[in-house]
Length: 418
Image (tube, rainbow, N blue to C red; front, side, top):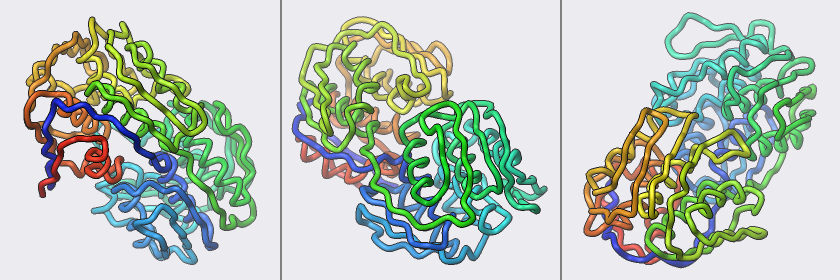
């Protein structure tokens, strides 16, 4: 278990480049199981979550070239098991994306409870309901055990929530189902659209990606495909907050302007000068002011993955900000640690927190409980007086590659201790 030790109170400025969207990379890697031909995915983020999913595929019989680089070449000529390594599954919530392809290739899937962020509170009920609508049957075994005795069959169904991974799970299964499938109340996030594009390149007929209704018709056989991932807008926004909270400026390249529009709105409400054009996102130093209210929403609303970071930024803004994340519980609980850093916080309930600022933060030891709140705590530590430690740093490295190197390139004094 590693610790990131850092000295706060330094202004961070400079430039960073982001790689492909983590939340696009995982479903596309899982989709490679649908075909016995070679697939190639470029601009893959070099992060821990991708490494874990690649190892899961290898354990199922896939050959993977390019690990450690930004281009993966994957071939699943045969799928030798329906039971992904339970230890690795326990490290990655995205392992749930393997259920549909395993049902397609093996007719059965045996998945241990997926791990990752808050595994006990984030269920996969929506995913399972979609799979059962397509013909899967639950088996009375530990974990999540499913069979498709008659193969997967196209169906029309309504998701009980517009879950991103739930929609992706439904898409991956529908891509191998006999007949036509209609998925209603589908998630509309850009990474869902990327999966639709990749499946189309594999020969699947997909209509309506990026809308609440997606129609899918599987080919007789999926073929190999290539795709270049779009830039990770959550990571780009994270680096913007890291620079802004220390009073610095930053230019982030590699992300799309249309994705950054959603991220920029609450940052602008706090007084930041944000610009986005082509593949560049820039944040200039500014005096921060309270935004009043920031509420997460389904795309194209403000994403929950950014809520921890804007909450930390609000500690340095003049006035009071109410942050409301109605989508997930527990994410805001991780930020209670900021109170011991001299932040003025009032946690109303699991979904709402009131932040009053500005407050001069003090360094301390912090617990990284999930990827995004871990990065937010790093931002707070970089703005604080004195030394701080964030542990386990592996939690943050699941979603942010070359973390130490990029922080140092911006002028941070940081050291990773194992």
